[in-house]
Length: 239
Image (tube, rainbow, N blue to C red; front, side, top):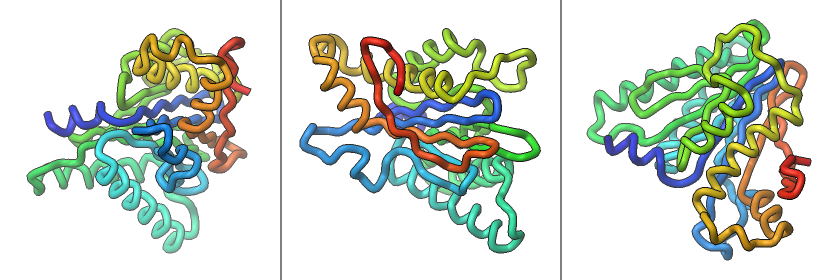
């Protein structure tokens, strides 16, 4: 119960897959506007596991960083030994096993929700979620962290049922997919700030989004590539 409650604290992360692409975005809130923007911090809320794998997590920062280091080590070791990249599904299984073993043998389990997005040549783009109990879930779109319900509602309205393995699902392009993820993530920020943000001018809102949100795309011919976020509140689209 403690671990599940901790995952709702801090920032938020949203991911989605479509066609040959996977997009992952993270919001890292600042305690004070004097604090350095997310773009200038060492931990952005997004981490590169390999050229084809991205990770985002919410919950206790130390637990998230510890599991990210496990993922990086697994990817690096697999490349060194086998000379080809580790499959995303196998990495997620390894991380879930580590979380499960920790829950069994430690007094305090991992207090995190981890999103793992990637691209496998055999299976295409994929998005997985690993929870505090070590349970693996596969999604077409998913949100974790603070006010994830609002983000899920936004994803459902634009992408339909978020669970994977559906037939006949339309595959949006990069701009539409990234905009959908950004809108879902922005809904968590708007709900968090409430009416105080309504009077804020557009330039300040765009600056806030650019500073506090990190986004990355992966695909069939696209390695881990960060995206520059520029949100136009009037048009409600990303540029």
